[in-house]
Image: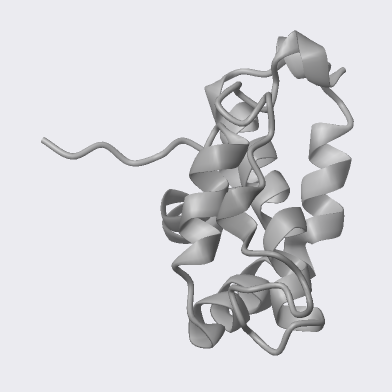
Length: 121
């Protein structure tokens, strides 16, 4: 049995993209990003950028520790977008950051903590 990722009703059109990109931890989002192609970044950007102001307005109504599952999934999608957008806007769709060390070498201490964890407040 498959389940569909929950998002607030106003953002149900982003469900497929959230299932592809939205992950609760920075490390999981990074793994998706490192494997993405220029076409992946472009389609993600095209789907989310026009909706970003509405997403942020929705999320502004909730404390990080007060979000339900759908709101948390929307937050994770917004975090994934913030981390992936430079790859489309600045890096020509490359999963690598130009003139930088290999991204997998960067190991954040909080990388496996959910984005809504207390330490991120």
